[in-house]
Length: 200
Length: 221
Image (cartoon, rainbow over all chains, first blue to last red; front, side):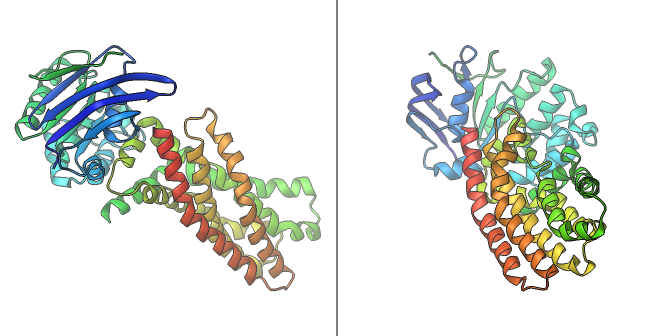
């Protein structure tokens, strides 16, 4: 559905502070882009603006031929520091709910569980998972409900080196299937990617 | 449709567990019903005269417990982002959240309300109308409370803010419901009060989600 992400001359303001101006990016199907910049430079705000949660001060965000509202509702996954998982519910309850909510099904949720090796954790409450396990649970949503555009905010930070590598493989597969990835990172992504640095 | 039911199930389960959920609201409600006679004095005549009104007011206050967290947790853990980014309109999502809140706390409180009236010495014949008012009014309280909860998102001590925003909105249902109960107890026509309560609830259900969704979008941006 989304084959292109096109950002032109974007400016985002938070409160009185202008985070960045004149930001341009064109991402085609099969491309990943590493978004870098110092803390507070506006990486998260850019991702939220693409989601449509923040209205940009100036500029355009387009999704190729796709209708922006539909593209945002059904064409993108967003994963940030906050993963939307309720600590009082079990991992499976949370995964099943979010996969249904995002248009996946039980079978796809099961195969995502296998892929991310979290089957032993499914009966545990989310509060009992480690940060890395929680991140893998959140990542399972991305596999279980296929959507072309992935907006990731420091996706690798809680993962150990094995899982960083494996998530690199998962991202490479997603790109090979025509996906697009925009990831805010401090360390380089474990796959070939474009890069965009946000400068104030 | 399955998304709507999934969300309703999840919200009801979360509301049941939120801040102790139904058990705490119910305990608070019964606690108030016990405290009132201690403050007012045990004379049956005086107590039974105020029983319907007192039980009705206590119900309104008990609904406030747990309401403040209706959106706050989803806001803090990022779930509200994901709920907002959906083909399902945010207005509908907010309405489902309020309905879940009502199922988990409003419904048990409504079942308790005739007991509270009887315990305070009110006429038993009043029970059906008390239950009806509590069921209908409880829906209005949930949807109005949702507005307060959404508006106070991001504020420190949001719970107190929610109560301050919401209590003025609770005035009409308290008047209509209390009026209907009073009228029935005094053998006067009571249907108008119940009809007004129903009308107010219908308005709250229709307009509340619009306000909640707007407040959520504002908090997320």
